[in-house]
Image (cartoon, rainbow, N blue to C red; front, side, top):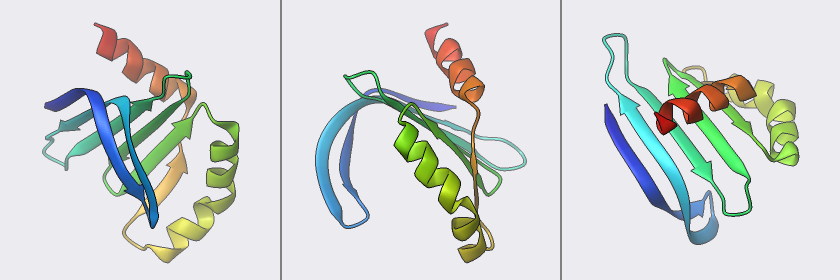
Length: 104
């Protein structure tokens, strides 16, 4: 697996310029059935974002309740627009399991 730990740079999100550094982890795991990618972002204020891409499905969850609500309300729209890409809401337990594995 390829692992990146520490500060990650965020240049922009869509057309919005961000230019910030944030603590995070990126792990890319090579598998026979396709690569898995996990991106975990942890802000200084305690908020976090968890993304896991596996076999055409992006699972997402955050400590930000508004972010989760927007995601929940747009899952069907995003999945219908992209036939080869689906998005779903991940469980907080997925994030917790990932964080526990990082600490070992």
